[in-house]
Image (cartoon, rainbow, N blue to C red; front, side):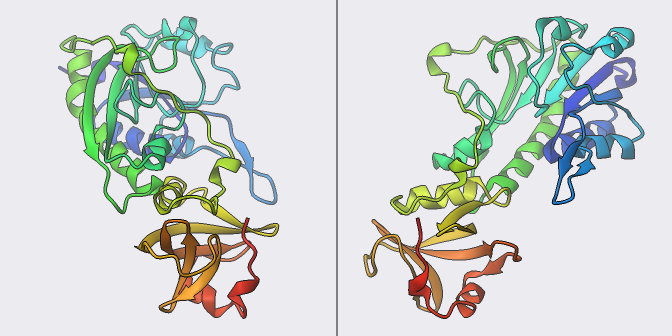
Amino acid sequence: MNLKDYKIVFLGTPDISAKLLEGLVEYGFNIPLVITQNDKKTGRNLKLEESDVSKMANKLNIEVFKPDKLNKDYQKLVDLKPDLLLTYAYGQILSTRVLELSRLKPLNFHASLLPKYRGASPIQHALLNGDKETGITLMEMEKGMDTGKIYACEKLDIKDDDNYTSLKNRLTDLAIEMSKNYLVKYLENNLVGTIQDENKATYTRMLTKEDEHLLIDSTCDEFINKVRAFSLTPGAYLLNGDEYIKIYKALKLNNQILFNIGTLNKFQKKLVLQLKDGIIELCQVQKAGKKIMSGSDFLNGIKDIGNINLK
């Protein structure tokens, strides 16, 4: 088959979407149009910043479309008559009318082993729950929340040292490899979809700032899993009064209770936190307005570790 004969419109927004877009173009898929979220105000100066997908599309000389609401502004798709709509972390739910503008059934790469972890935050939830494996599902888009037929699904082991950043990148690499095989077969009508088992469906939700709060009454596993789920972005945090202390890496040292539960301490020259079932080392931390530093460097800047009042 000649991939250039098939017009694919790619919809995505964050860095992982940009990485997949680049991989698709490098392999030879014909993507005449990219749809992404509108530019957002960021930073202290509220400067308009385009999405990672927009930046990548510009680098690849692909036309970019940034509708406020694609479900109301889709004439560009009507005019283009795409063979396939393909999404990966776009950020808007598409109406049936928009989905029907794809000649072939539209597809989505979803970062879980569906029907497990439908919804907005499957990667984070796999880490929060301490899962040992996850994967990528190539599925049909329909009006429901990740309920469409499954065309391909491949597993990926979650490493003990994986965090959100490393895992999302490894999953995107898997999506790129899957596109070279399964997406080509789909364009040739050589893939058969299977209906999801609704009895096994679980859902995730949009995570909030409060979800990033590290609770001092957690178990060691719960605490470390939350650190992994929000690292390196946006970073899970402890509260010292009203001051945020972000934690980017934590390791369990032992099962001992040597200090008051929920307190920071110096132990074996390490910055540690006593939890109810053991002691964990805080390996990478960041005070508000400062750079990420090691736990030992954090200790060097603290005169009295006992004065830190966590909540």
